[in-house]
Image (cartoon, rainbow, N blue to C red; front, side):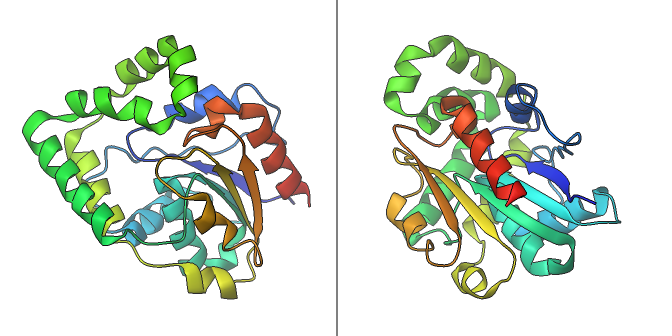
Length: 234
């Protein structure tokens, strides 16, 4: 019996991000796609991990695909519930905690959301996740995503920002775990350095996507799909 495939979305988006990716490809079974952008009860990434696991099938193993914040949650799920996790794909995500500078930026994001709300935040947030050339050539998509995610709850974004700011360092866990991980990373990712991904190459698999930012499911969907499928089948 194959492991159930679970896709975990990132910050500033919700489960709808996966509609734009999953529907274009063939999967052995229908993936499960939790949506947690509206949650305010989770005070830590571990809280998200526990609450999501409760919502998933309680029999059999899981293969997790986590984008950005979804990757942080996948790491916590693998650490807290290793007996349930078959494999993990971290898509534009990292095992490193926030630096002091990033923590300050999270606090600024929280204050901005409190003052201006989610709609204004999303207008400036979406395009910053993509490589500049992709943004220039895909303005209609940028407008579509801004319109889509303007209705996200500010309280949910604030809760997620606090959880990401305070998340743990998973580098030791990654070195010691027997769970296979695949890192898919864009070499133009503005949020995560390529060097930080290559540093874990001795312990886990890495795929570096050229000319791609933080949104490989849009910028290089076929390469992302091929990497995920190869990893699952291996």
